[in-house]
Length: 272
Image (cartoon, rainbow, N blue to C red; front, side):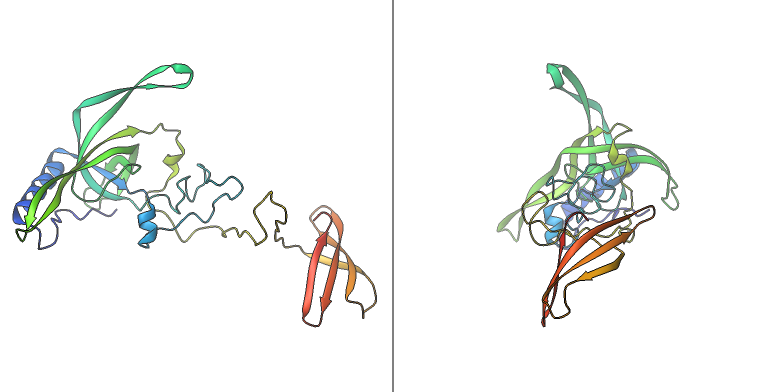
């Protein structure tokens, strides 16, 4: 398992005071905190910068992605999240309770633990945190335990002057809250490392419209056997009666073939 860029304090141009504060935060998380796996949720920024791609298994009929899709997980992006990396966080002893109105007007009391993390890796709302037991030598995960969804992530910054002219913000650490996902939540199926080399064929929507629209075309492949040809060889139109061979039965249909010297166009008629 890959560790975050531990003790990376920024480029050389970073003021020494900022580097000291970041190192102090790193040391506090490493000493007092706990190791977790962080998975950054893909965004449109990641797509524009070439780190992620939109889900190729998008359901065009419903204009959404299924939450149970094992390739995009309802996020709209292939893989859903970046591969997990290990970092350290501390969880506050105090918890913030919130009252939420549930279905039927029922009042629900929810607990949102607060956490603090170093300034890197960048965390944001919708990211996943995964707890577990680790081999501290190889950092391989031994047992995975709970999964949490980050929310209200806020970078803690201070302002400073660069070259005594321009005011600049420097991130020192990150804070936020998270919600524990129930064990039957489908996002427990999100792999820590996504296998981009083991994907099914990408469905193709041919031109002619979307499903349910007039003129929508679909492409199917059939193993066919020509039974008869009606028409003279010199005609530009002829009818073919074909049979598709299946495991248990055969179905017959007809197609019309219209062609000239430049090529042949096949139009299906009837059920196929």
